[in-house]
Length: 323
Image 1 (cartoon, rainbow, N blue to C red):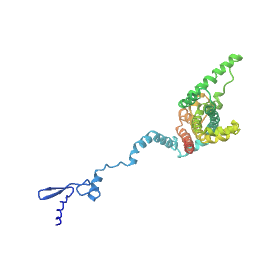
Image 2 (cartoon, rainbow, N blue to C red; image 1 turned 180 degrees about the vertical axis):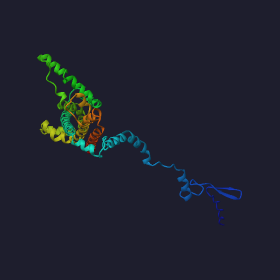
Image 3 (tube, rainbow, N blue to C red; image 1 turned 135 degrees about the vertical axis):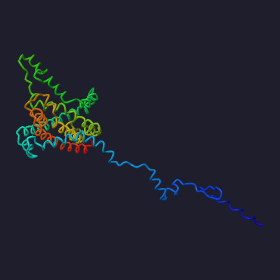
Image 4 (cartoon, rainbow, N blue to C red; image 1 turned 90 degrees about the horizontal axis):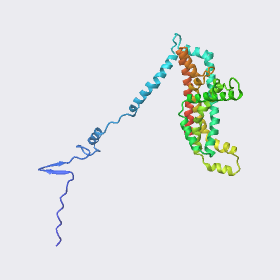
């Protein structure tokens, strides 16, 4: 006789508790209205989530500090350049400055000094970087580290050192007078544009050497060994192998030096070159010596415009060079 089927097991209802005659459903994670996917659960979840702060709101404090410290004084200079103290039109100060011989002379002096110093720094920096990177000698690493320290030196310190050596009563003139018995030495070029040019080349050359040394450290030495094994002379190796790799670093360093030379004030002031007037020196003379603040602001605006344009060029070159 077949066995009777066993009674079906009582079906348990999940998340339920029986209390007397009522069945109470336990709340799901989504909230009392059901799971999180239900409309009520999504609203509860959104209410509990922290409200995110917009990204632009975080940028307001640094932008405000930047505007207060840098942009506001610059705006005052620009406004003063369009507001002549003796009255007149907004562009009268610009027209007066542009017509003056002193401005044209200062602009020409600034440009040729900056260009000459840049060329000198590129040539000297390339040669010195080649020697440090590829000519083994004791202390090469120490010299490379000293270049990094040299970048932190103030410009007037180098000028003072040159004055101690080549000044009127400097070491070179003193040695000359002791040996020849003459009343004075022959070195008087520091108070000329050539002295300013020498001081700028001396000070700014490490700014070219630093990116060059970084570029040379990434150069594959196997290329140099292959070129040398094929009979290439050092000059040909430099021209065909090293120089193409160094061009981006040369362009970046040269652009930086050009911008810095255009705004250099301490070197010209400390050399005592009275006949050398650059745009920063002209701003100083107009504002401090002549109390012509409108003209000083006009020259400053022109100097800033040139500097910002060249700095934009420097950033483009540096980006392409990977600096």
